[in-house]
Image 1 (cartoon, chains in turn red, purple):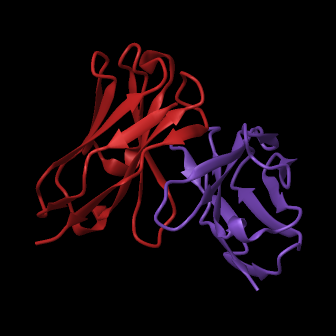
Image 2: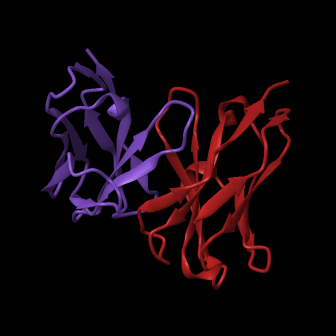
Image 3: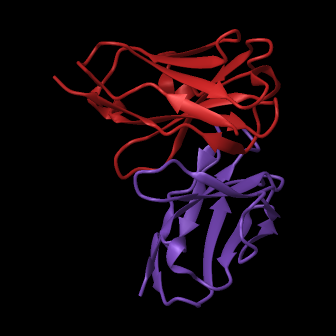
Length: 121
Length: 107
């Protein structure tokens, strides 16, 4: 069965960087797009970025002003999301999600369990 | 950016009631509209994509309709396991965006 398993919770100081991983299994990694989203406490879901695991193409939300970088390791069937220059408002649960197809414009049919990142001095 | 507006933000209904949630996009999204269910402490779950297509395994009491900028999500007969927050999401344009959510509770 399709599984997306994310790395564990993190506590970071303002200005630091964070990197979350998402290990996949149960499907052909390069055939489906991969997205990163987040949900701050009590807030709506927010889309951050997309990667095509097959060719490595990426697209980012302008709302992160260049602070987010996503990547993948096809041999490990794992995707990564790095967010730099962390601020308190980056405190959120971060999710990886598989796209229902290879493109960037897709529904999200499988999700990771979420990774809580807390930014605090 | 496309703004998604959901209403109501919360509702309370009895088991067996019909529940309806609306979602309005700030521009025509060409029916690229999905609905998700999120239970507390869990990741969202895709229920409906492309306005009205039920994801595999989703009960038929869930349905969606609409076009252009105005969309509706319904539960024909509310069940206790449907207690959750429901979100609409557009994928017409980047950044992909979600509505603010509707929290459904049992009366």
